[in-house]
Length: 270
Image 1 (cartoon, rainbow, N blue to C red):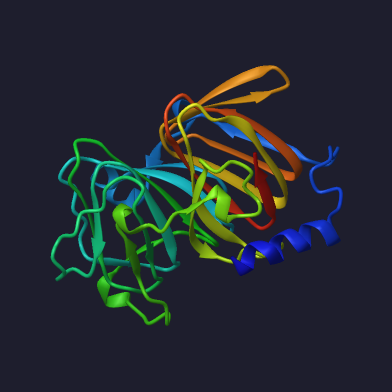
Image 2 (cartoon, rainbow, N blue to C red; image 1 turned 180 degrees about the horizontal axis):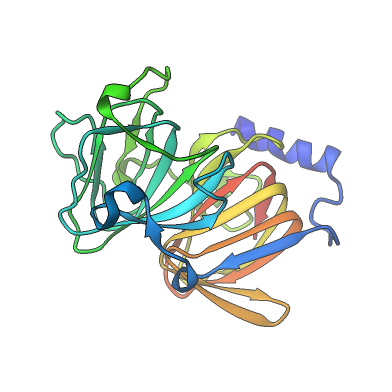
């Protein structure tokens, strides 16, 4: 793969110390049980989906990652957003499309993007419905359909069965041939923000070495145990850990785990 060779060269030439200890690094961990829930659209009260921020602040002009939960049978009125968002299904079944489109239900680990200004509805069909949603800037607003505009972006809906997975033996930055990765969006060079879904096998016991201004990880399926200075953190689906600078994340899993990575740097899994 061409981009992996470029990625490794950039690390070796520009950052020969990339995975060394760094006193300027920092770590954030947020377990799903501890998040604070509010309403995604406060104007609709309890008719709105619930929302809980993992990082950022959806009411301000900053990048934000949040959990959103929908009641069974939820279906929104047609509406638009002022900013583009990306979503990943954690639990349940979600539909997101033009108001006149037939329902195409997306199961867990499905990925989609919703362009700013594009008229659409969102619906949920599972007994429990939970997604991860992120924006690159805020505030995140809901507006009526008559406010729609053309952002020159195109919506993307990727059913879980259509994700393209690359195995560790195809990638220079993964030293475990049982780890797989699906690139979702953005760049892969140092300094370019991008997102990927990483699949860790059952029984994984290894490390994620990171060099990045921004590294964010959200558990999408399963759960991992993260070790930090002898302290154990059990992170189930919907939990978050992130770091800045050079950082080593030690993780173990009992069952297969899917974790969403968002970063502007590089990482190595082994």
